[in-house]
Image (cartoon, rainbow, N blue to C red; front, top):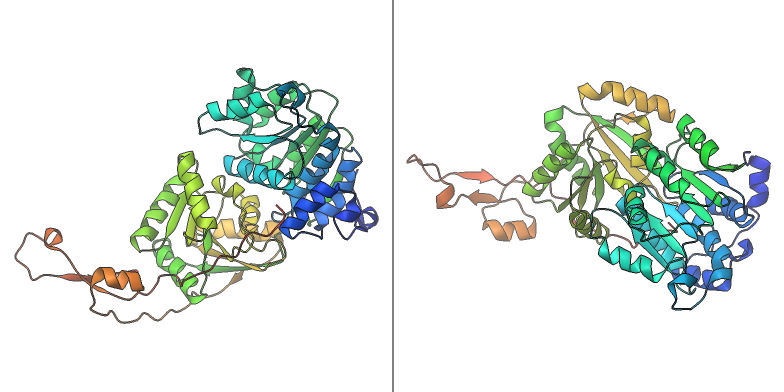
Amino acid sequence: MEVGENTAAALEVATTFAELGLAPEILRALDDMGYNIPTPIQKQAIPLVLAGRDLMAQAQTGTGKTAAFALPLLQKMIAHANTSASPARHPVRALVLTPTRELAIQVHDSVATYNKYLPLRSTVVFGGVDMKPQEAALRAGVEILVATPGRLLDHATNRMVQLSQVQFLVLDEADRMLDMGFLPDLKRILSLLPAKRQTLLFSATFDDSIVGLANSFLQHPLKVEVARRNSATELVEQVAHRVEEVAKLDALLRCLKAREISQALVFTRTKIAADKLGRQLQKRGVPTGIIHGDKAQVERLSALEGFKQGKVQLLVATDIAARGIDIVELPCVVNYELPYAPEDYVHRIGRTGRAGTSGLAISLVSPEEDRLLVAIRKFVNRDLVETPLPVVEVARPVAVPYQAARAEREPVERVLPDHEQPDSEQPRRSRRDPVCALLLPPHKVAPDRSVA
């Protein structure tokens, strides 16, 4: 059953979180964060979840979908809240499954924030880190568990977690879980849960695979769609530049310099390409982080935290690794390489233009990527404006000491040290520091103020 325009209009009568019937403790936490007005997906989903219905919800990233399921679940679990120290009094009642470690951490952080004035316990488990701290948290008892499928099954196999009392199941970014091959793991997890439960499925797209998953796991679900089917956010300016593959690095820096972009998330298709681009940018003196599936968890979290704090100007990422990145006022996303799947283009540009702010998506398109651009245009049903690369004037180098020049972000004439000079008896040579004219401007990153 779909929630059509008339039904949706009726559900959106509420204009504040208080009117949605949430408890004072939850409203207090939201007030601390400065949130008073629910987003469209929250207005539609929260009453349905409170009514006990299974739900299929489609919404663009940055629309507040985490709060759309977390707030009503907390509300429904208040009856079970207690301050007992006994783990038996704190069984897992709500299970939230996410496809990636970064997204799991992000969702749990949001849940913990909304839950700050309630005696409900929560934790998060994911792979790539030591299991012992996670086991200790599980043994202590938690009502809300956020997990990636693989690590959850590890704990279940080791009898560290019991799922027999789960009343609420959330599949977050279900489309990505299917893309990553988690369907067998999901089926194993479902076999450990009670048949009688409330299940909520959130997805950026509703293709046939998602509908099939919903038919298997949900009971007579209501369907809520906030965005047009497969639509790209209207708040994002989308431009494309025709660039030869070998010229993309300079084109990237020119675009950012010309538009005075303070921070950007840069997408590549592969881990190898992400590593290569990241190293090239670092050699240019641009503060750059790299995240992909082969990076150690501590490296990924460090890069992401540096990006959120504004210490990193460019974050180079593959599609899977970037799914957990949620920064409200991220000004720009760059498709350094176009994705093979048009759906991934929508996910990528959804990282900017969030929570009502405008954003920019730049695509650098090589001749070999023409067919990918055609597929994206057809999928999003809009034309990506093709514009010439901006012209950036390069200042003349100034002969000043190398380290001082880098600190001031000035053009430099670097004299190579003796150990870098050629063996032949040639005059001492110099080279231009490529960072001179293309470094990004100093930037300020606004705090993340969205309801995740």
